[in-house]
Length: 249
Length: 249
DNA sequence: ATTTGAAAGTGTTAAAATGACACATAGATC
DNA sequence: GATCTATGTGTCATTTTAACACTTTCAAAT
Image (cartoon, protein in one colour):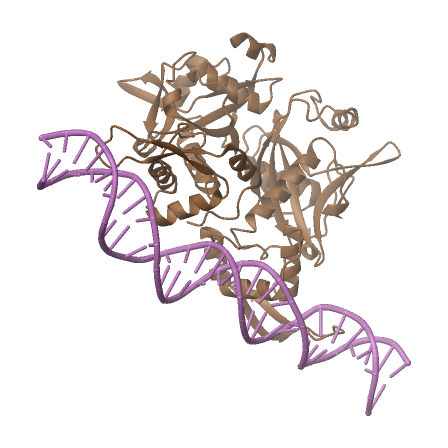
């Protein structure tokens, strides 16, 4: 696998351009984000997975490659958030010592292109590699700071996600194949960061025709078992393409 | 003026990062975009105003500087569209000859950060300077190709504009201080690229409370003169900040 | 066997928003 | 004063929204 990636790259890193990835995961209760760790002083420093691009590499490819190298995640559809280019974005003292350990030109001006995506957390047990000492899921609300300008990038990603949920269906990538409407409901609440009326939520979701009720039910739960649902892939993709005017919350 | 800009820059261009600007204007009939021209073969080559950034410059500052250098436009609020980074984005033969005439390292990989904005056309008679042989307004619908990947960038800008109009008020920057509702109506139709019902449009705009009717009327027109309006700056800014859920077309 | 706890599931109503639609008006020009 | 042209205005049927409470089903505990 590593080989196929290298086929498309030279050995030359472009010292001025990096990519960073915000990967969201949902644990049926709250949003999490994938970060990499680095031992630092008497604590740990956290950052989004990211690194320089190769000089002949597409930005999207670079994002996928870097994400895989640092966390093991592959085949993820990454969507661009935008460029972050403050000339001082990597100049904090603590950040500089990190850079000195991993970059040939730690002082170069680097602008970064940020990407985001969502994955089913259960499917991905992130494995550290490369310069990431470890990679792990952290609940978004517990994150108070990140290296470089990554906290700012995370905020931008959250805000994009919030925006996206109003015009495109979301959930297919974050939930398992079979899920309950309560789980989907909770997901929307986590993203929008506010409570949504249960009955109104269900009504709207059902009107979109993106979920199909299965004959199957939850079992083993100490309460009324929930109906299971799947996404209707055709309709889901259609709405993913065309969007809808407003989900309306 | 030029001096103030230089104060914030070194003489070092970063060979790998450029900015490009999509500036929209509205001539009361259709959308236009500001392009720069270059003599080429027996015709003319068109491009968006753009160039390399300085190595210690903010991206937003670079966009403003480059725009001013190439077209004379100043003090414009530019909003980022995103990064365009195809490794071959500047490799067309015709583009390469342009680059050879203006770049120290014409073969360097360049990713560009695209910005967009809108201005009142009447206020800005674009003046060419620097390597732009001329700068001019061209109706968007007449543009079939542009240098580099600028056509693609233009499409992205249009699509962002279309998206933006549904969640934020637009018009303050594109229309003169006093304007008629028909002009605003036409602007919305131009951006959304479809007809909108006149009465429903007026109803919705008025509900937003962003326009105030003046005591003044149009004069000299060979038909019933229109009421003139201004934007209510406070309410406009409030909606600009907070957005609204959906303008609903 | 019965009770308890916990989340699932379900419908109505009043208010607001939407989309479709047609004709009288005011000024300029001839 | 006749004509041309864009302005300006209201209604109604349909759809969408937001607010709101109780019954059901299963597992676990007693």
